Length: 323
Image 1: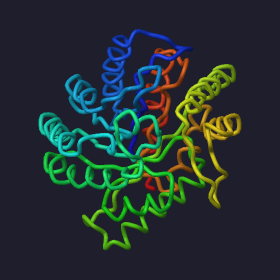
Image 2 (image 1 turned 90 degrees about the horizontal axis):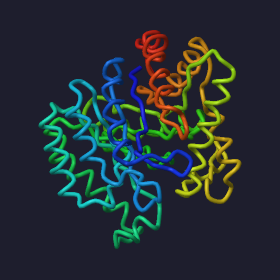
Image 3 (image 1 turned 45 degrees about the horizontal axis):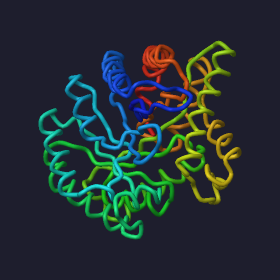
């Protein structure tokens, strides 16, 4: 199994206010810390027109992180491709990948917030076609420059579609493990049904809520930080439709239950407990775990300490574990 960390959203929220300049400076320090710990990748996230300054433009930020590091990969999880000019985004991504020896992972998603499409003067009905055009242009320009392409989906149909195109998939940290397994299986089936494009099975990455601690008080605090971070999803209006493997998760209409279901996915405990939890993630078909530890209210020092502890006590024990 491979390991990354995320998501850096560069927010300045009502409960954790900070100057935006500090948010971006902290990101660069965090990136250097991740690289020193030996992580493979750092992942960013995009939204538009949200009160807290949620990062609206991922490629310039990715470029800054790559310039501050030498081995760390940087991924967009997700760049909202329907909101972009496909040709311009592909040309920028190709230039970044070429300058930084292919260390760019371009994750592309559909987007779901009406306000983002309305604010850009776009129709949400066109988002699938616009995403398809973006993937095609990225494949033409960014992949030859060394970038790796990923997609995001919360449905088996979407996961299979990404697999059929030979794209990796990045799964949400809020997904319960049975849904992760269902999406990973659909992704693999889509790849196989399409004739195995590229000849190598595209990877499955999953954000997972993880906190390493032997202190019950710190564990309780970490769950509170997880809970606070998912409260923000109520404002963003995120939802996952009900399926056989999981109930609906609607942060807008059923906020309390959605938050508690998301927090319940957290793997928190000492090294042995975290290793057990991550072995279950691998068994669900996940090739790369992205530790979701950048949480609302969590002190920077605590986040960096957990990342260092995971790198020292957990990652070496799982490096040889296969999905």
